[in-house]
Image 1 (cartoon, rainbow, N blue to C red):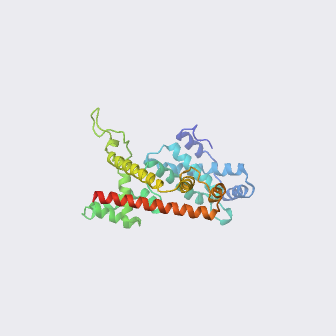
Image 2: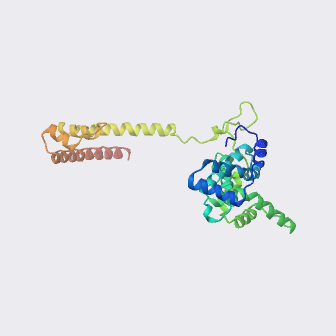
Image 3: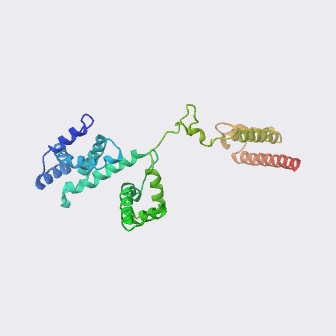
Length: 292
């Protein structure tokens, strides 16, 4: 059903004019869709219960989402319900569809509430939609007894009432306390006030780190060049072909070129690495002795 072309009032009027299905007709349509994939039966079933989707969507308007979008999500939930409904279970379709419609709307509201994911678990979802109501009731009850609930005590009571960890209540309180704002917004009302993004710490490499890193890289490169000079020509050739090429050659291909067995090339490679290791350790000791 294309909803974008209608206003929410037109959608509501259209839904309210749809036929009311009796149990027998509903069951027949459900069987026709499940067993024969009869699209006309599906359309008639969904159209008849769009009033239910519209009614449930209206209960979530206080979260600031456009009514048309809420109805779209409700209709998606209704279609999922129709696709998964099993008429053999003896339950009315409207009863089954309520859960799917509500779940679809709630997921939409939570996805669009904030750029930061508001909640992913069922307990966090329950907290999102019930926290304000539970908080208001607890405050009314405390006020009737002449008490005033402080922040931590109130959060603890909400945690116990909803059955979620205290940390989730504290997190959700922060999520619900205000909407997102741009990091490019200025920190003051002045024309050239600093933007909030300028207050974020740069997690990139700092200048001192870059200098130190470049120095270490240059030093290591020099050490490797010296270590390579400790090898004979054949060993340098093997190391270069095995470790310094973009696509290293195999021991077998080097053996064919040098007229050696693959095992002999492996032995020469190991010997070359041993010589280089000794050269690097010697240079490192000299540096530490000089600095010490």
